[in-house]
Image (tube, rainbow, N blue to C red):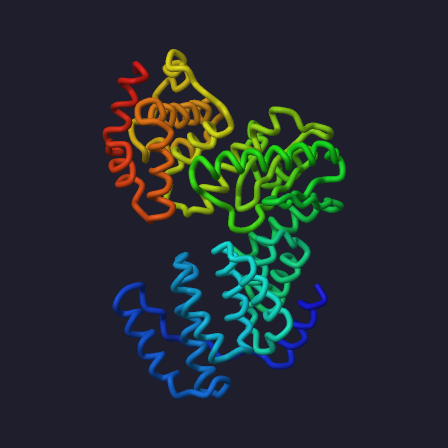
Length: 398
């Protein structure tokens, strides 16, 4: 908070650089030519000179576009070049922080965060928008709210930022007094009414689940995963989480627990959300049904073949797209329950017919090699996405 206040004062004194009106070219040849031209301009510029500052500003805009597109490698490359040209550009520093945070490179993220807070004297108002995102990812809610409020105070009116600010204020209101407990791979924040014994039990179970899932699928957390344990459903109500769900993953594993609870029900929910966290850490290229099916399988849930027909009635989805749409609709509890049952059953079909090793290879192909899910499914399991649902129906007797 103190560092942000200092940054605010610096901003008021130094102001911000003028904005360019030239649109950023789309990905591809046009963008590559624009980058090459800017690099040629910057080649003879002295870092910190007006020429270098101008080139840094233009390179930053392209780097920011890459960051928005989640092209983290390209974004970090361009933003690093901009930082070399203009070390006092606060927006570049903040975007580098966010880039490395998304890439789960904690050491680099904290390096640039310190410089954003301490050295950004030419930060435009947009720096606070980016800093808010950074602080939220670090579960520094007070700082996130402060940063977004500064963005609004300085004229920011982006509806998405206003919505994030409102949600962060709500979360902050129900998170007062939370205590922190660190484990090897997890940072757990717990409401005062969640027993310490329950926190210890759940932390230990999470570590055990992580060891199993990481071993099985070859996925690793590259930074500690934030887990938030709420006593009751106050936050879940504010976030419009359906009342039948006691856990959610949105970059943080969030769980509603009864005060004093820490039994098997809570532990299975944590295993489920951990599977989501690992798959998300590997990228967003998995369909929703695979996410939900594998998460249920990892929590230990099983659906006997004889019970599948009743569980997925009245109308199981006929394709990957239809099942993803059903899972996203959350129209009513029975419909969503049928969708979850079908997702689990599809994963169980793959395990039964090809073995869990094939699932692990599929995950590795998509997560580590960048293979499209449909291609990985065909290569490792021997079935196309189109045929999968037909074969599953015959296997399940539907």
